[in-house]
Image (cartoon, rainbow, N blue to C red; front, side):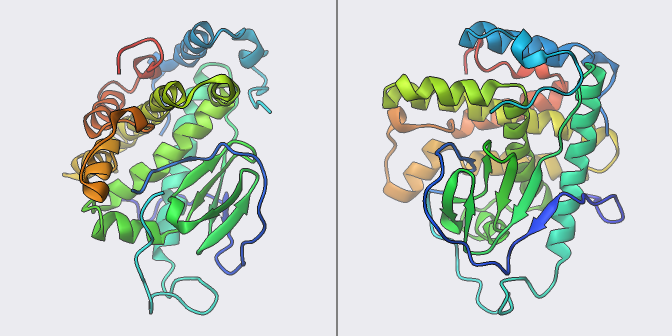
Length: 306
């Protein structure tokens, strides 16, 4: 991935030297489980997507679309592997090249989603990305590194302990810079769902759902975030940033963190009714689908078989 020398986002909050603490907050973290601008064809796609989601969830899409002035903002797994020696006493790594990488990928997502929203007459709100070490307290409650990267709709922030990238490589066999970029783009995909009201409605609906039904709906939410990550990759490729093998590394990462693959690796068998992120095949399919078309209308996991 040819990321060096490109714009870096200012929306990075580095809390690696802070000590997280406190319990409480609301549930609703959307995480990776452990254990350019859009082209002219996107001018009405976001509106279509919101209308489709509104039809499926039974809410008025006009409440989400607003007047086009930017009023779109609504209301574990395995243990992190030991990285002793790679951090100083403040929790910050000896080299901050990875922070620069994260800031560059975040900037690329900002450019892409700003373009897609603007083409629909809407305003994209950049999320913040919080770097932490060990544990963190968000508007969604307390989390440790063992939970993996996650997005909190309560504060519009992506949370990332970068030691997860080591785990992705060493424990799950998903190496490569674009595999890491996919992780960030997936969480930003949840932010897009939050801005369009999809995530908020899901959080409301699952309060009255049984566990199995909530899991099935969660799979659709997660697969759509994968597809959104693919849409971002589509436009990133058009900029000439991707190198040979980059998309293959992202697809491999999607395969390695599928519910079935993780369960089989960790417990030796799978329990399909407990899946809440999607199988390896599903995650690869929807990531590839977004990448191939670059169209949000092709990411409608709610009205199509998954």
